[in-house]
Length: 115
Length: 112
Image (spheres, rainbow over the protein chains, first blue to last red):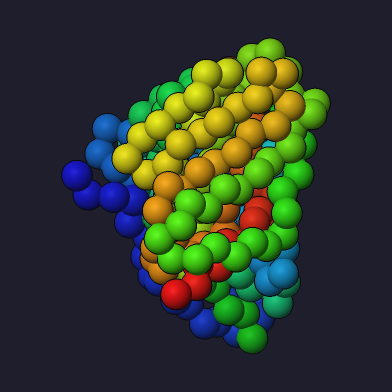
């Protein structure tokens, strides 16, 4: 079974530019999550999709961040315009269900550096 | 979700058992204890979870105290590849957010 795949693995962009991160969840997993770790901080939840619908986006830091999941398959997270404080590692995770017993599978992350 | 407290770091000799403690004194009746780990430059990896009974799988064992206020993750024979940050997370069975709340974790260093 293929795992959660994230593209790109690394991205370096200038402040003010736009970057789009992509996540391909495990096939059949309706639940998709985005998390991030900024430098020196803990891993924080960003948002949760159930199929194509946003179930919870309480962790999105501001309106420069836009997440989509067209057709309930892969998801994209766009940062526009990027700021220096957006630098960090962005993780995607997926799960079959949300009740206990369903461990989440995380991707390897996208390391974003804004200069 | 209840808050957890873990020691920031621990060392363990290769081949020996690694016992990682976690306090979750405010855990409520329907909250599960989950353990994840993050090996350098990788995404968090699910290890094990439990409610009140001890659990064991191919990776580890989870011992939860009778009052459920603390638990211990046991890696029976630690290897160098087990060096990672280990996160103890308490999560409700059907909490509305369904997110995982990561704390600082315990940085386990397995030494030869």
